[in-house]
Length: 365
Ligand code: NAD
Ligand code: IPM
Ligand code: MN
Image 1 (tube, rainbow, N blue to C red):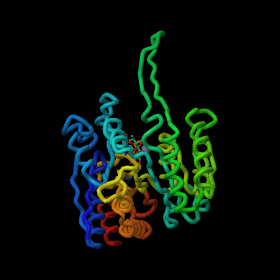
Image 2 (tube, rainbow, N blue to C red):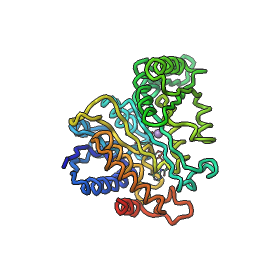
Image 3 (cartoon, rainbow, N blue to C red):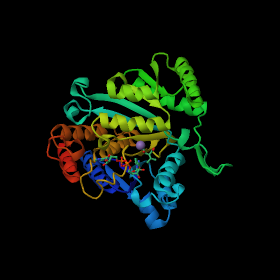
Image 4 (cartoon, protein in one colour):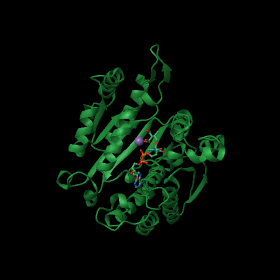
């Protein structure tokens, strides 16, 4: 019997609703295997601004440092959109958390069950066997973290700039994650960039080419420009197996991948780095790729699957519990393919609530 120690940061909007469902599923799955959960819950994002005057309170950061993993909901929303940009939840809490724990690799699995092709905007003939691809997004570099400024020009205009910056070491370490992911799958990787325009992409492509040639000659490496990749994802997603890309391209492409795989409400993620937890496994932050969904927050109808599947990834990567992780993933699959679906993936089926979805998954366990 083991105890899994993690910090829970539900955040804003639908965050607390889907988090509560995920903790119930996690608790049920772990209890069945004779394990215990030990977590503390902390404010982050807008709610932390309201309660503590800052989006990432010291106490929250400290709780994360003392835990073996972070289970994160999502942050932000209309209530905090008029604060100074640097104080807003996304920039003042989520990005600093990723940076503080050096979580440079964000893994987003694009999985569409064959039984769920009706929830994809793609025609079923194009994806007869569903979709199974992985997006690996660089998460602590690029335009998100380079120098930002706003200034007055000499001719009286306001100008602003964001800087996209990458170093070879940052590119190599994300290439390594892509390579390891590919080795465990189809030994095929596509690197996505904009090397016809951006210097960072020229360096990215050069570094990736040398890295794979030297370390992973057995992996089939291809390249694609990001505009073409956006189109190819919609045309034939399964031509990819593992694709990896810089921070902002990965942000955009993963939302596209999510809807092609049915819904943003199904897309989980693991953010990992090199920091080890007290078990000698990877410290990680686990969160749905989607946001706080202000349009449906508070209605009890959000899809909890992305949060539940993120919790499964936490068990796999930070607690070494592959088997329980797979049980949760299978239970989600069984519930959803059995016809229990929230509104975002209902398409003709009667939509269920967040808690009904949760109960169906626990029953499937
Ligand atoms: P969003 O992802 O919150 O919502 C986009 C659309 O997807 C909405 O129609 C929403 O209802 C739907 N959706 C998302 N998750 C869903 C779920 N689990 N079930 C059902 N439907 C779901 O994106 P947005 O509207 O651009 O952003 C809203 C807020 O969330 C913003 O403040 C944004 O910055 C923030 N955000 C936070 C995170 C994060 O904390 N990781 C991620 C993305 C956006
Ligand atoms: C995501 C989100 C975040 C990002 C925002 C909320 C900062 O969109 O995790 O995809 O852009 O990384
Ligand atoms: Mn995003």
